[in-house]
Image (cartoon, rainbow, N blue to C red; front, side):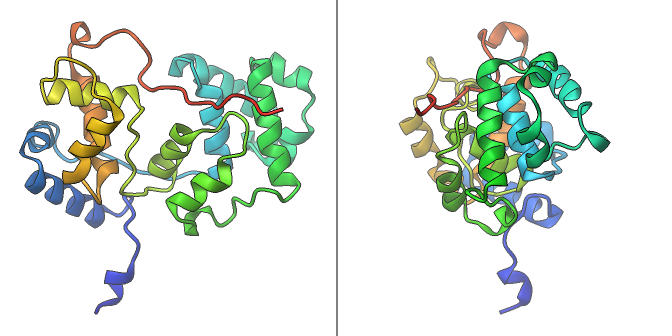
Length: 234
């Protein structure tokens, strides 16, 4: 068996991405229509894991334009605009509030950064951890639930088989592409995705594309994703 066969699938690898597309076109004729319409998507996962989590927390329940403005102001507080655990951990609450971060999200950022600084959460080897291991490691962090971890797995770590069943964009994309009367429930999505494994992440990318490319009249009001920030633990 060749060395390449042992290489973990990473969606930043063009060959792996093309393999995923070919597989989905073969296993799901309806999804194949969307793939044919939109062609090969440009997808370059990457970035720092901690920074990605910070940005995901900031973006919860906000339009991206508003979240982006806050992230820009937050980065401006630090050298080289880098979001580092020790820096955020040491930043006074007043400065974070001035950057536009809400009190609740400050609690989330402080909890995340303190866990990293104190060694309770080690993100240095996140790229070597399984999806389940990352979900478990981040489960106790305030404001981080399954959806946030799933976005990290797809867009930062390039994992191939992530299925965000609670994501409104994915649900809306399925409703539109498969001509459903109602938004599909998680169980129905999981059944549909039996044809997508082990490339659910790529299927999700095309479902988001379907939703984003549709006329506005066909898209019900609401954010493109479902916030899943867990209730704060005492």
